[in-house]
Image (cartoon, rainbow, N blue to C red; front, side):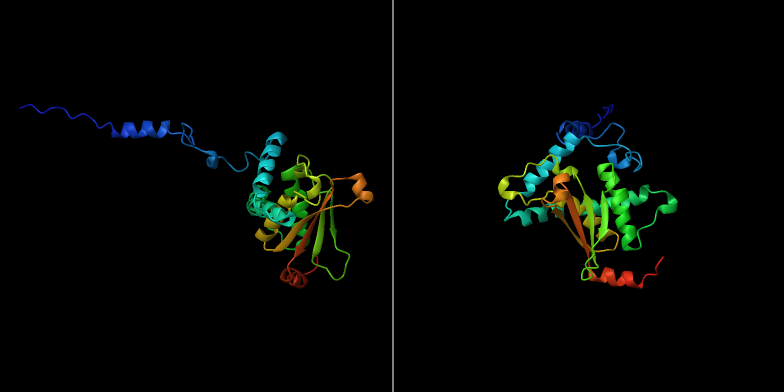
Length: 225
């Protein structure tokens, strides 16, 4: 009795067609995703401001749910930005030339890294000013000034929330960079009042960087350059 040829099973083909027909994440035909791209390929690419404005507006709306006040909302925006700062520190250091590919070893080097390299990566320009507190009682405080923060340009703040500063999201990014570099700090965003600078730059924001006491004590033991 002649044996009948065995037909190949169609289970594999059926499962493959079912997988491709399901909605959701689509993989390219070559099997490579965005995670296979070199990190330096997108260093000169920029994001559309319209896309950023829409995305950031949705982030603010999401953070605004079930908040008890302005401070709670700013805290949530700060928490959203913190993990971004942790990842940006490693990415930007990786993209630096080999001669300067070193983590900051003191407070001044860290703040210069933030106000130049980080600010250029986020906003295509450096920060407007970097100052140290002149109060001898607060040697752990530094101030980064931005005359016109991009994150506040497309946010309409109601009158009852006029003290809200959505740049708390950027403060969270800066705080993440400080924590990732081994300089734990608390970073908050403050709007400038109606003084002379407030009239010249109505949206000016000062980011107050307050380092922990252990950072200041460690700085005192470092050799002076």
